[in-house]
Amino acid sequence: MTQVAKLALEDGTVYTGVAFGAIGEVDGEVCFNTSMTGYQEILTDPSYRGQIVTMTYPQIGNYGINSEDVESSKPHLAGFIVRENSRVASNFRSEGKLDDYLNQYGIVGLAGIDTRSLVRRIREKGAMRGVISSVDLDDNRLVEKARQSPGLVGRDLVQEVVADQSRSWNEPLSTWATLPGDTHTSSERRPRVVALDFGMKWNIPRHLHDIGFDVTIMPGTSTTAEQILAANPDGVFLSNGPGDPEPLNYAIDAIRGVIGQKPVFGICLGHQLLALACGAKTFKLKFGHRGANQPVLNVITGKVEITSQNHGFAVEEESLPSSLEITHRNLNDNTIAGLRHREHPAFSVQYHPEASAGPHDSRYLFGQFRELVDGVAVS
Image (cartoon, rainbow, N blue to C red; front, side, top):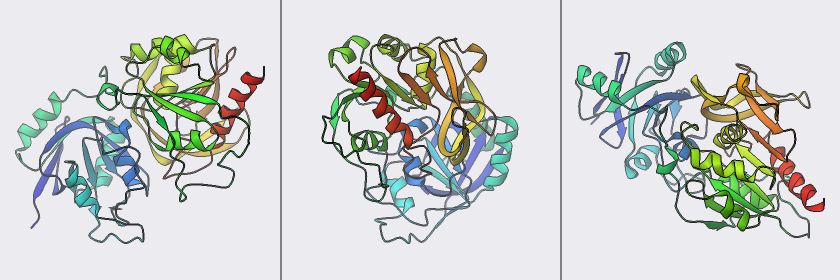
């Protein structure tokens, strides 16, 4: 028996569909992702904390769920919206259905609405606060609840997704994700990297491990520059994570203290935090970049990369200090997609070169980080 569920937006729009996953009510910022596959990686990406994610591809769940294709220990998003929740999970790796997976982790889902209409509204008006409910179906109450939702700006969502203990990482890339040349085969010592966790996807330390690093993950919420340097790493990695980067003063201070002391590589939120630590500013994008098909120009080489992205904030170009140089641009809107420091060994990108469910064009960046660390060690 199907159960009615609704999505209400802060602008007063209400969509009526059917519930799947957990029964309940959640609020968050409603955004969309254009990926055709990778819904399990999206569900378990901590960067989606506080968001209700709409998939633009019309049928989701058709290849099921498995225990390998996860980016963290559990789903982190607030809610999940699809046009059609596939009744059949057909794949030789499948271990279960999407509906059961969402229900297991208490994720409220909504299916059967016109996702094209919803995405067009978000593109025209910008990402909006919203509420999914399968327990309260009163339109007026739901719209008011959407308007009372706190949104993302000014919130520290990193504190909600990061473990408070440091740990070593020894898990390699899955055989399903490995490409020729991924694994570093040198017999030389393995450089040590401290990876600051702000909501890190697990495929990032897998790549760092396979390129030849010994990886220690430290909580980005509490680790200071002094503690990082006391660990005497050969390099420092800054991870992705959820929400607005500007409230994260503890992270900005820590990063500022290691720039010039150790080679630094940042991805997504780590890119924004590196820019903030150097004196730049960030701003909220109208509806963000979320998908596995975002074109990026490498302005150094002139090559175009197809990239996987998930962020709602970007670095403000007008605020860039002279110490930072733009290395990559998003070709959809010309926003900054990569930076490097002119004086110190530090660089970052506003996308995901580890893309476990996306293109592999940008994996070379992990090799560049290894070369940067090795070069500093030799000098």
